[in-house]
Length: 306
Image (tube, rainbow, N blue to C red; front, side):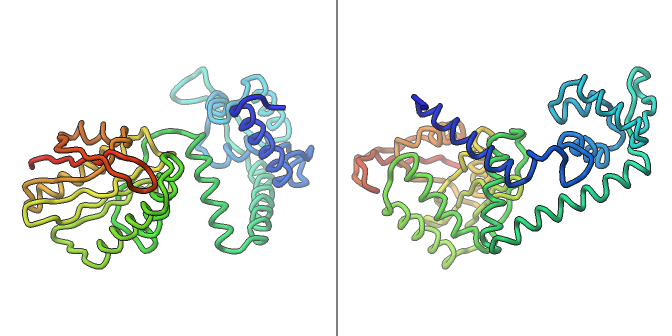
């Protein structure tokens, strides 16, 4: 039995792995009733979709042992599926290319794989399909490459509801705040949508791999003062500099449209956000204890002259 929270989580991951391998059929000796194992099919996929990779490049991409990849490639060569061509840039390396026979073998395998996944999705409703994809994107974001590839864009239909939902969930999970905070966020967002003035207000949405991972608002306090509101970065995208980038965009916009000052209200428990604000040049103006969102908190007003 697991004797620590981490071990219990590890067991949950292992249980999911066993479940998922049953779902996709990788425990079968041969994938999709073909002559290829899962790893062999994965190597074929890389050969079909990359421009003349080398064996060492396949090893790096797939995390496989060089000796194992060499044996698989040799087997493909004997079957006439792969040709080796001396690399023009490195005489010591050989580039790998699928032959016509190799492509004819891969085509039906690729089609069968696509049909199998379509069959899985067809058992679900459209909202359930999207929920499954979103969960997979989140897993990929947590375990995959942490490269800071994201875009900032204008809001689209559905984004405002997402902001309310994600902020409410995040602060409940991380700080134990109750639904009073969700109501506050909903009021702020609704006011922005109803009274939006494109000449003096703005919202940015941060998106990574097709998933919304952050947001921030600039709203008008008065003719000279802009207010920064609802800075948010999803936990799966932290460490990429998205929070700092969102704040920088707010400051640039405020200066461009003629504001002379920017302010915001926050709480002292939001330590990571405070570091972002301090790096951007904001100064703490005043603090006040209060009881909100089911917690005793210290509210803070911050500002910066533009």
